[in-house]
Image (cartoon, rainbow, N blue to C red; front, top):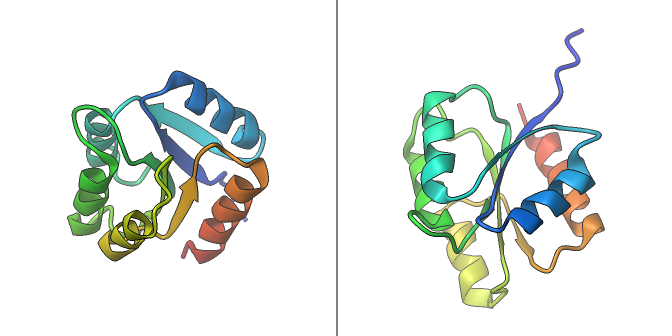
Length: 128
């Protein structure tokens, strides 16, 4: 049986946040990262079969997370990817907007390691 590691694209414009996520997830998953939405979109579009999950920051320069999410959901080769939105803004309307746009889950910063692990594990279970 092929024991391929689940591949996660970490997208955040703050290097420290990427470092924290890598510390939490590196042992169990194949990780890649992008520093803004534009770079994330290029990685996804050019490598549509390389990622299973995207952990996507909402507020970023060049292209925000909601725009990346919209593009993922509209792209025939990417729409299957599980997307977990993350932001410091945990207002109910923002969470609802992310879920309405097609997010599979939502994490509020500052990071709680167990919340991230639970969200990732839930997304992994939903992979087909």
